Length: 220
Length: 255
Image 1: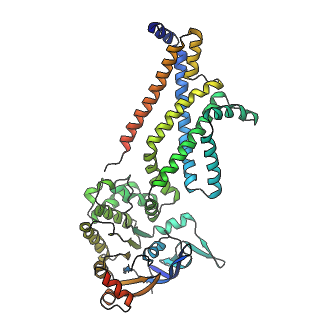
Image 2: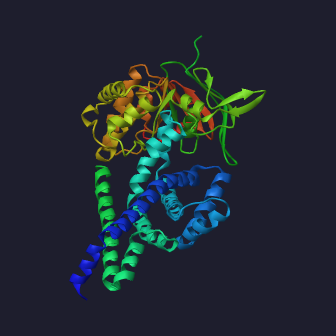
Image 3: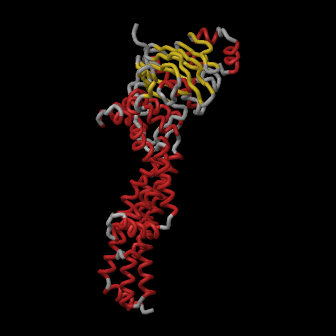
């Protein structure tokens, strides 16, 4: 393996690779930013919704978590167009990852809400807070602190799953790398490079997560 | 005759098939301090929790300042009020809990401010000043920026009491506020409650501290099997119990 040659190839392909990198970040960020609040909604309904709503959302969540993300992406891209919803590959991919993210966040939010003592809700009610007041001022801030480590893991899963968008033609980092390989035949070097970049993205997310965790941890 | 602060008539409450309150009648005027005593399972905590609808009740009426809590009569049927209405009614009373239930993610002063800001819509700076005043009243002003995890049980309970009285309730409910405390911390909390009582606060307490109930209340209610067994001034109940059940209960208590 000629390292100089590989570095040279990466350097000369820096713009398309950077484009791919940017797409990977964009796809992941948008999916996580949309999927998380949606997931909080899922967790809210799973915990406090009425029977009908709970049943529907339970089905939604179980179905999404029981389906490979790959299938989900293909389904969003090919099946939605059949029923008349025309999404670009990028939109369909982000849509699929958002759904995936929401189901996972929903489960961990529900789990966290379950562990908050009932006395918290009662105390909030006793000072006149409504259901939503109680949820947003008392329960959610506690639940979010609890889910933070697991949520970070979900975020890294989303980054990894974003590579699957390459199969529907979204030029994210992996597909951009493959396109460079098809010109240069430096597959080993470039796959290694792409792997390293993915690792660094997720490493940064983990570090940022730890940082936030320390920032919001409660003194005792 | 003024409207009683609390008027409970023929209150019935079931948990599933088990009837835990079997027709309670209780009236409290402004400034009254009433202690509920009795063995566990007699229904005293449930009774207290019906007053701010932390427990629904099946039959009878709980009225605070003449307003029925939780339900209204409509064409002869009993309808549960809307969530928002119930929330407003709950804020008429204040409650201190056995396990304090402070919000762990908020400092002491923010615990006290929450209800003022969210329920009373008090501007933040006013709420801060008010909360600071109440924390001072319970001797916790110097700990206002501490989080519940940094406070002792007695300190947490004092903050919790400040949180409740800051709402300026017409009636304070105390649910075994010292049962979860180490013995050496009990007195600091009881002192706060006593201070409020002497200030004319209307209070309904569930307590296992017989000496305290004796000293602070003007009426003591002995509950047995979901009914009021006996009630009257503390001297009468503690020194001259009519029923054998109460005599036996007092004998087994620390009093």
